[in-house]
Length: 232
Image (tube, rainbow, N blue to C red; front, side, top):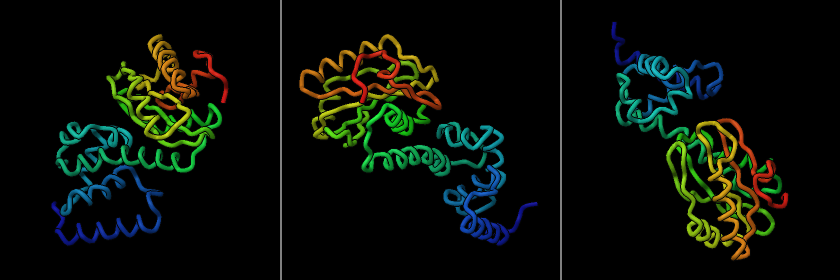
């Protein structure tokens, strides 16, 4: 039996009050999604829609990582709701990267790996970034150079140089992700890194490392001795 509109309004008010008091603590996955959907679906009961999302994608992370197109296949999810859901992980990555950029100094491979892990976590395609630093290893900028397919990415030395020059950087760290989860650098990774190092050496910019980010962790090509660079 369909609930009257005033009961939905009262339920929404109670859910919002609950969140105001305790956040998401103690909330089931479908309840978190139900609350989120209030801001894309202004009227009606979003609880069954939230249940359908969990049933379709299996988990909260599965829902948030789903594409707009796949989300819209779920009954009750329109373009506004699908866009709102898909925004969340992207905004969270930007938030985390912004936290790291604020006065962040990278002075060890461990710090570099954590910085890059946050910067690239959750991406389903390969992305290649250059992190520009000053002579005291303070991060000036993290510039996305290109986006590839799930198993390949191209490297652009000229674009890398432009990003470093615009940031007034004197040092650089390269990083890209392997969505497959395989952490070992490919032959292309090593070859491209050496080519980029040669270009940077020619303009007195120090290449500090190349970080590869997997699904849950990262490796440093300096630490693994895939490239011969001095430790930080």
